[in-house]
Length: 82
Image (cartoon, rainbow, N blue to C red):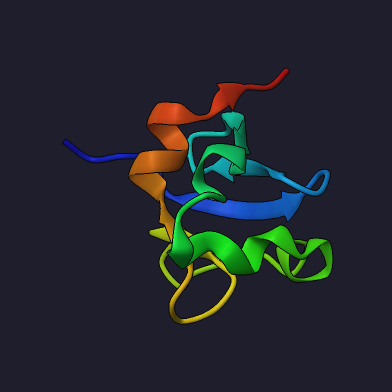
């Protein structure tokens, strides 16, 4: 199955991103449940969290080469925004 690719993404508070997909749907994704995992500790820092960028091709949002979240996760677990 093909999942929509992420176009723009931005931090909307200290733990959530707004992700717009290539089918014009917007979804909010809350990273709070991930912050207990060592891989995501970096995102506890609000300044780092706000530096979110879309990876080339729209396959993920990323903060570094080690910390990213796939378009699959964002699409399936994000909450629709109006």
